[in-house]
Image 1 (tube, helix red, strand yellow):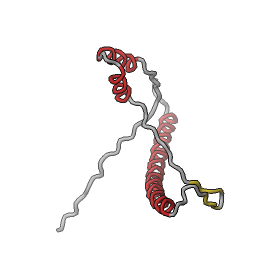
Image 2 (tube, one colour):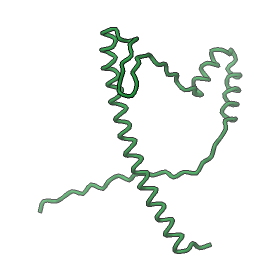
Image 3 (cartoon, helix red, strand yellow):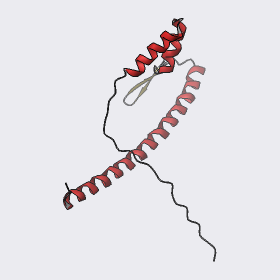
Image 4 (cartoon, one colour):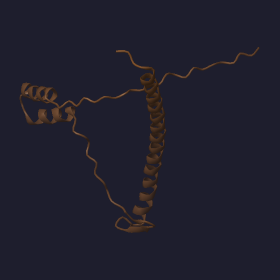
Length: 131
C-alpha cells in the first residue's frame, strides 16, 4: 500500500519534531549532569565544615524547609556476576552454580518496546586553504 502525500508530510513532521525534542532532552541532561557534579562538590565542601564544627546532628532552616545532615547507604544493584560469586561461596558444586546461573539467564522476563535510536555523525571539519 502506497502512502499518500499527506501521510508522508505528517511522517516528515513527526521525525522533525522527534529530532527537535531529542536535541532538547540531550541539552537538558547535560545541564542536569553538570548541576549534579557541582552539587556533589558542594556536599563535600559543606560536610567538611559540618564535621569540623560538630554540626552533624544539626538542622539548618532555609526559606522553604530545613537541611539535615546524614549518611546515606547506597547498595550496588544485584548483577549476575554478584549472584554467581555468592553462589560459588555458598555451594561446593560448580555444576550446580552453573545450572542455577543458566536458569536465571534463560528465565528472565523480556520486555519489548518500540524506540528510535539516534546516531550522531562526526562533524565535517573544513580546512581553509591560504591562497
